[in-house]
Length: 74
Image (tube, rainbow, N blue to C red; front, top):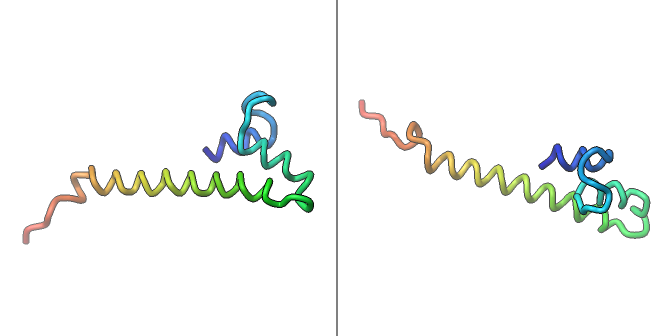
């Protein structure tokens, strides 16, 4: 997710006519003082998406990892 955003920010990802969060950030840099939400919103979306995937992965690991569910018997 982050790599795609960085690549589309510098112009090496998807076509110019396709929406991408990195391209939105690159376009919003020109009008940051007139409309800062155009810059903040894609950054916030990337942050929430990456955080969600990390929390989902941690939850799945805790649920499905056999080594974490075993109880130790002394």
